[in-house]
Image (cartoon, rainbow, N blue to C red; front, side):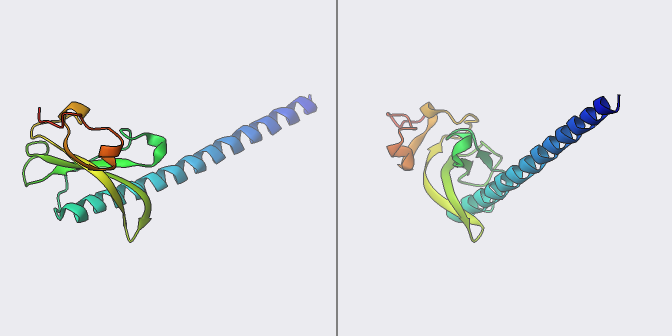
Length: 139
């Protein structure tokens, strides 16, 4: 009976260690993601020279595993989505609290979904990646 108890104890310790490692890994990953997002918001504000608080960061548009984000915000003061928006493609290492802007596009006012057909005025990587509408027109 003591041998079974020893095996059970060893298995429980192994499961506990696995859960502890998974937790530490997740916390570290989330910390890096948060640091990037904070830098991305700062980058958008610096690039546009607007200190807006209501910005829309998106980690999924360019692929979550790429560590490349898109941050959209109004080009003029007003409620979110009520004005024309500028969306910036941001990636690279964080330096001095910011990351590099590699491209972007504009979205018409009252456009809450960042869909390819609504994007216009594309610049930088957005053009070469073909993530903007070929017509580049307004919806």
